[in-house]
Every structure is written in structure tokens, then in C-alpha cells.
Image (cartoon, rainbow, N blue to C red):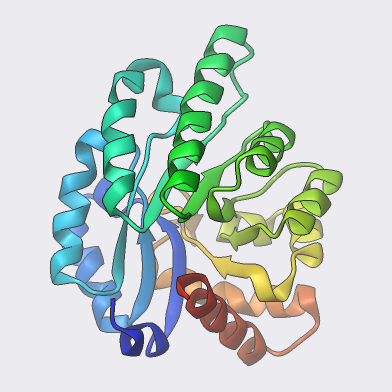
Length: 250
Ligand code: MN
């Protein structure tokens, strides 16, 4: 990746499922035109090649190899492929834990997969990860502390305040989406997120933004809501988000 293209970014989307939009090429073209650095997460290692190919023609698309915690039960056989992909990719995601399931065996399997993946990231000198932590933030943070995998972005963080403070202490990064700025609890968490560690995310096509699936381009306007929460100018937010992506890549 050329340094110039990092510096020239006009926006950031740290978590987008480009491959799950009906027209991924159109999304990638728009990303390229608007110069939005986008971490293109994938949910299973077996589909990574599609997004990796898309990224070859679109320098603002940064493909991430992942295994979504909600797919671990059916796709855990792909763990060796994920481990192999991590060898040659800079970004990893979507990975993490989802404790909406209360089944202890399912949770244990998710922890096994997440743990092995963290070990691999650590052993190759660190990666940039975008991490899911629904109802599991305490355990995710504990595992990150035990096996530091590089730069960990907590995507759509929705845990208790005490876990947020632990994550900040551990040096985690955060990405904010439109659903978070609209919710009362989301806003309270954003208020405490460090400005120098915070990014934007669409989590498209799963998050709604004005009745449409949010896209890397559409979410850039949430800098307005974030500026109100942080009590600064919208330009400040935009500048720090772009600077933060640059730091993330260093
Ligand atoms: Mn996601």
C-alpha cells in the first residue's frame, strides 16, 4: 500500500461487508471515487478471495480475512484456512465472540476459534483486527489482554462502561456506526471513546441509514452527531478520523 493513498483519504469506513451488498462492484467503485479507506470484512475464509480480488482493482478497499462468531458453529472447519490467510493479509475480520447464544458448547467453540486466531496474529507480528463483541465484551477484552494480536478495533462496541474503560486502557480502537449515534446508550459510550483511537464504520448492508443500507459514503455524515457528542467541530472529527486511519496503518 502506498503511503500517498493513505494520506489522500477523504473518509474512513472501518467495517463494511462489501461482498454482501447486491452490487459489490458498484460499492467498490464509489469507495474509490470518494476516496474512502474501507476495511472490507468477510464472514468466512472460503469467500475471502472475492473481496481480495475486488481490492486488486480498488486501492481504497482493504480486504480482511474473517470468520464471524455466529458462523463458527457451521464453519469451524474453515479455521485452518483462516490461519493460512492471516499469514498474507494485513487485516482480519469479522472475528470475535457473540454470546447471544447461551449454549456453553457454542460459546466454548467460539472462544477456541477466536483464541487460535489471536495466537496466529500475535505470532506473525500483529495484524489490524475488526472485532465483534456482542454480549461478550468482558471475555473479548480478557482474551485480547492474554494474547495481544496487534491493533484491535472494537466494532459496534455495546458493552458496559467498565468494559469500555478496560478496552481503552488496553489500547483498543473503536469504530462508530449510524445505529450507535442514534441510540442513547451508544451516545453515552461514544462520549467516553478516545478521539485519537476512534474511526467510523457502516457495518453495511446490515445497518440502516435513513431507510437505506448504510454505505461507506453515506456514513461520513455521522461526524456531525459525533461532533455534538464530543463538543468539537465536525472538521475536528473528520480530521481525527482520517489521522487515526493513517496511524492505524503505520
Ligand atoms: Mn459486521
